[in-house]
Image (cartoon, rainbow, N blue to C red; front, side):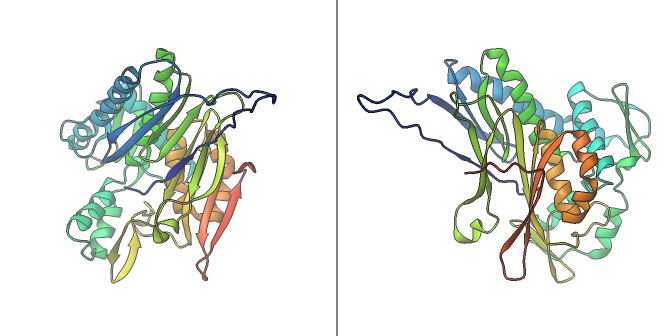
Length: 342
């Protein structure tokens, strides 16, 4: 469960006056949106394809992801896998295998800062939130942490094997990004090639709204919630890639009388010892950017820089980390982050 935030900034083209060069007309941008994964989705696209056709494709894809990865329904594929307390190989769908492989790759590259076996910790957090944010017992947190280890899961020939029967999976930290990728892959099959797709805040874009008019995406200022609204801190054109942001600033609970945010370090079961409050990642894959946003929020600036060659080898293209200073201001750390902004 994470707070993830991105904002779309519109670019306005001016129509030429008489006796002046006439610019291209403003493109007609269609928009569809709806609920998904406990949050919302939004798709904007250019073209003559009926909105109903696009919406049907998008919602069918989202329904498939819900059936595969939802931790809130008993008939999902991930629920079936978690219910199987066995070390025998379990057959999984191609969709599930693809997302789990990416999750395991990110886990290995980040030394476990992202971990698809984090469910015991996630469950403990969710239970406390449902119980009115009651204080969380540190011993219970330690017991849950002992059950988390991505190395206890292997994937081979379409089959998942657990090293221990009590291993359980939670792919919430990557599923929304993977859904963006799946939708982006399907839209060209119905002749939609210029689009913006956002699922629970994770964004991927293809093409441009019109020649020279890229989709522009903003990274939200983590302090904007205090001042009201989601104010963009920086913005950049997004062409044929994804931008995903993870933040620790809108979800917290009490542990031993101390305020903890919901992004646990899977290796310790506790908050990381740094002041990074937001991590944004650019990548060709939204699934990768989604997972790495969480991982970098755990790792912090120094470790993120150290591990960046590994992450770039996976396909990461840039990162922007925002840290809270003592005076309340934000300090930014850029790792191959593009200089173009609003």
